[in-house]
Image (tube, rainbow, N blue to C red; front, side, top):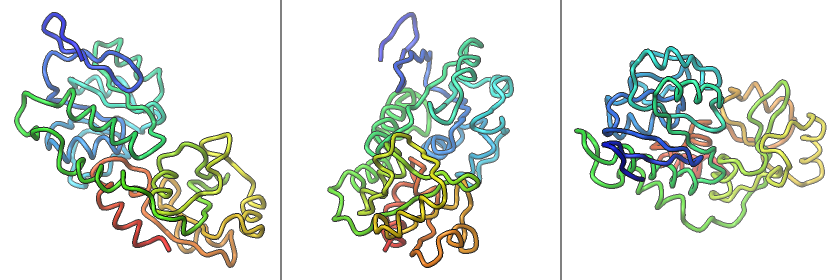
Length: 270
């Protein structure tokens, strides 16, 4: 962080400078998890969000398209002081278009672990939003401090080895360096594609089934997003395999939901 000519310059996760004359009062978020984190912490600052920003449920703001393909011009028309983006969920060209329009953009790196996500959230909420407008909590938000306490504890012994699909047609599973994979690891569930070359491998169904046949995996974890797996959609492809349905938000969102996620996922997993 630095000051120059009346501006305070922050540095986002990718090392880009984010110059702000004042703490932002109008924020457009292109990341569902960041939308929830900011609106939960400082209600009223979010003035635009994507179609997939479903939390908080009462959020009623203009929508600017999807996370992968937001309309930069629609975001700019909302006259934001700051736009929030993510290196994995948003395209670099959209970020560049907003910056070329003179709009500061904070880009969060796609977190590979829960502590990395929490550190990024801490930097954002105690940096650009740290002071100067009503509603900003003093210091670290209580939910963030509680999430840090819960998720930085020593993981329990491994109790299951899982395959974790996130899409079907084609099958896509959690691979290396994923936030959701680290969430499970910290709850005692290893996932068998953690050592894959890709973050989101696309193995054929027969290879996925073979993991269970060979005894490498003993649990199928099925989230309800991005693919909405259900009792009737997902387990049918793995006859006889033990499975558990979990909230995709609890598995993959970083923000206030992490507090409830620790409790709910711990209860849901065998």
